[in-house]
Length: 287
Image (cartoon, rainbow, N blue to C red; front, side, top):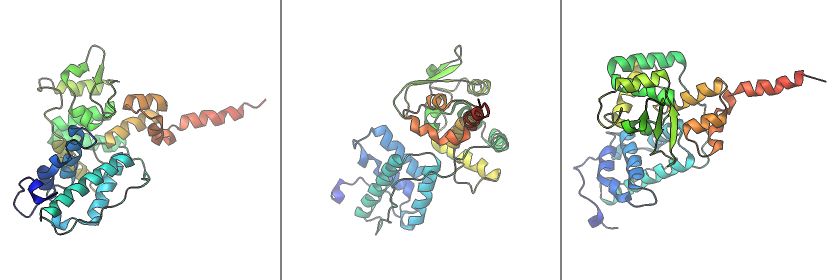
């Protein structure tokens, strides 16, 4: 590859978000869909934002990996994201925008830390602040908490996917490419009704960047700014964790979440103590 292969670049100094806007087309047609790859690059840009390439250090990358892990990314997904960023940085070096590429952390077997979900008081504080400062995002978060959808799934939802007479929404474009239907709580239905009249779908007017910005403002305002695990994806963990604590089977939880591999749902198994209690109680019935 030569410099002639590179698209025109913005003026120096270059930020990570500028790098992503400049170089994402490099990855078109490589292994995955254009949409999937562009989503990864946009996610990188949203996380690092205005940080200068010249100031990007190894610790910054470690912090990013911690964020991806807390968001529930699998090791294979994290490897792909790290590889994408590495490729972008190498092109920036080739173009002369940085003198070196920082060492990239290796992603082997990622050990999942403490599973984070929102407590009832945390949820109340978060929603109160969002409703006061960014109501549309507040309704989106309510919807995420009561459906367990991935943020990207909810943002892409179309009105034609909503079936109020059946009390469900049906997802067609999912991460696993498998259609699934999710029943709606009264609170989730109210959130959709609040978005009535929005073009395309209830939340399509909200970008992932707008969601993250509003979320981070509220997170800091309620005293959770130092908790790196409190990202929008925590709504999905909150949904699943509450179901497990209320005795819903892991199979049903996995179905609602759209898991194709039952092993993925086992991260919530330690919360389903009712099954363990019932099993041990059988020992009380001695002959």
